Length: 164
Image 1 (cartoon, rainbow, N blue to C red):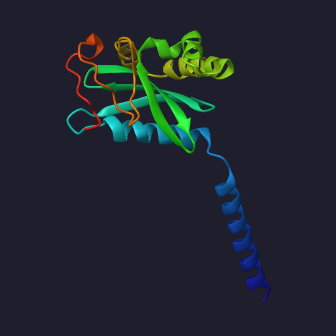
Image 2: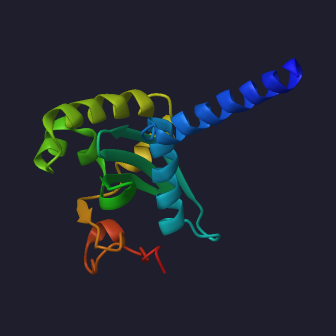
Image 3: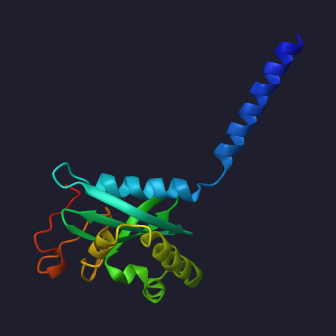
């Protein structure tokens, strides 16, 4: 009888722990996974694999470094409800707190993103981080999270829409 009560108590504790975990807000780790998943689902192709890292998250904003087919850049993402959406792609502008504030990110979040990104990029291969700067200009994403028509934009010479 005591054995059954003990098993029931253990099961009850496990169920309570699962319920509490499910009720907790998403962690930064969950957000990093969600951002990475969105980037991969949007841009990764078998013939041109996408690499996404580092990803830093602050509040409702994230910056993700990416490389693909000898090019690279950074993406700014915004949280929309429980999901993430691509907002724009850029190069070094996304590592600057002042530029992030000018893009509408609250000052505290912009400062934290810039500091966290600098720390995260310091752990990456310097040659890969150098590719992030090769993305010229700022390209806003459309409502689908894809690049709008950008004919004539030198930063994307030879670039194809990865969402197709």
